[in-house]
Image 1 (cartoon, rainbow, N blue to C red):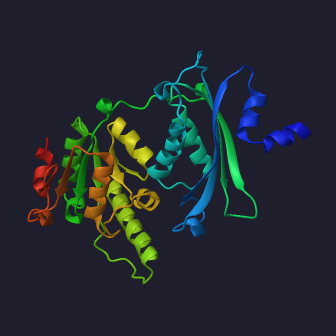
Image 2 (image 1 turned 90 degrees about the vertical axis):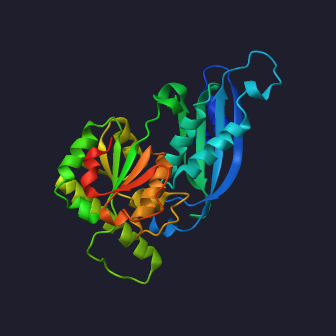
Image 3 (image 1 turned 180 degrees about the vertical axis):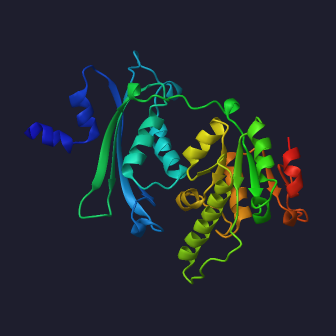
Length: 310
């Protein structure tokens, strides 16, 4: 029992050695400290804290002495996996971060098993953390999708008159039979929300107001499914669904948030379009017809023309 307790708090390299049934090569990353915004509590938003990574990767033995960095699992692959997942989005849980880092490391063909320990250094008198072990066989979807197979959706921004239009059902019929997955975006509702002086609170109120408008759209047709996360959007795109974007989670959790104000529905939609690399953007509403800033993949059309869009 004493030995088990010692190993529980030992460095992952000792745990790896103690639990391996055959001789394996290992590479390790010790005491890698980064400052990042992470945490589920409101007090952890808007501020950074130090987190420490200790990682051990068990790899396929090379079989012979080699001196070629391209044929080994480089230390950079481990730190790159950490940086990639931290940049992807703001996370609430260390458990989620550890899982994603482990999976990304196991994408490397040499990696067989990985030990990931992450600790928060500023949340108490000691290190508060999580440690996981993942085997290559535990990961079902190791291969990342080929860029050539990636679907590029169409983003359709609906003005409030367009949401209320009698043509809505016909538009959705056209979008449903199209080979291009559709993401619908909306802006603030016509009714003004409460006014507050606190900018962060005002931002949340605006985002929630847009989400209320998204649910209004969903209430008009059951084919409109409100989605809040990148994972849900990816699933909807893959399965050809019509999704309505609720922006709060992605905007608040973004490591590179939109420059547009939270009350700027068009600006948020354009940020999402860049994030998802959409095929094109369509802004539906008479108020957009006189705009001069729609170019490239974007166009503005009147409400009566959406059903003719191919």
